[in-house]
Image (cartoon, rainbow, N blue to C red; front, side, top):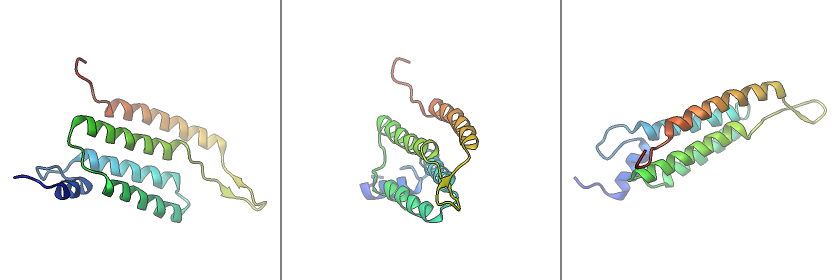
Length: 132
């Protein structure tokens, strides 16, 4: 039957397609963002809570992609947010001197692993265009 916009959006947020079967793309995107925020703010429960709220809000206010182009755009936005969380946030520990410190070697190692994951994610989420 015909599905209304509200029901389509609800299914999108809950990870369901219009046929009522799980849409692993949406669920996977949500989980990727959840893992990225947990890693970025692993020692900061308040920031984890705030970022989680923002992620849920963005998923709730977006409309369900209905075309391949919209789906590709949504995937690109999720990838961009995930990579930002993973690569652009370094949380340090507050030292006794009042400065924030972090282990640069550990940060470099994490960035190298994330760059490898990023390349895999880009290859996985790439949508071929007509003629390819």
